[in-house]
Length: 196
Image 1 (cartoon, rainbow, N blue to C red):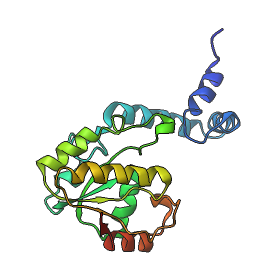
Image 2: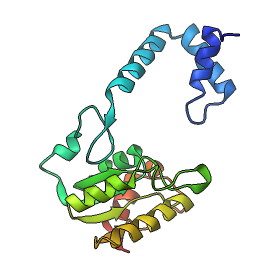
Image 3: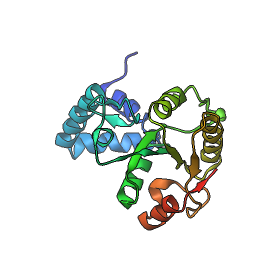
Image 4: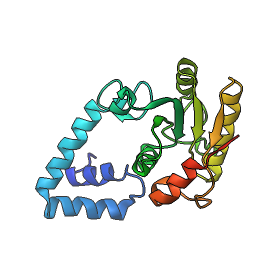
């Protein structure tokens, strides 16, 4: 039996992180009852983003162009490459205005229990990036078990290529996420990074 349009909407909303059946149902009811214009705008925006947003060929972040504006900027210091887990982490570091280098966004972190290994993070692209543009690599993964494991793995991999590797300082709370830290603490962590 085919799903009704409403059931299909509720099911589609469940793909969002942290959204269970009840939350998806509330969202669907709200959009249909109180904000049909918002629902149509959401649908259009989602379709446009899905069709036009890709990964930057240099930093792996989301971009509408093959090379994002940040990577194309001549004002950035190509001798520094900051590796972060997610785009939100890059945005947080940018908001501190303490880092003028380049970025590489992993789009995740090593998590064997979730089936995420080096292949899923496309670390070959990071290695190529570092080989093409030699630099100091600053590992700015989160201070979680998975983030620390990712940093350790990357440090070993990159040091084997003769690359200088540093890690942001632990001014951040252990178990904390970069996107939830105040910009002053994050700026201090970047400035006080240490070589691994």
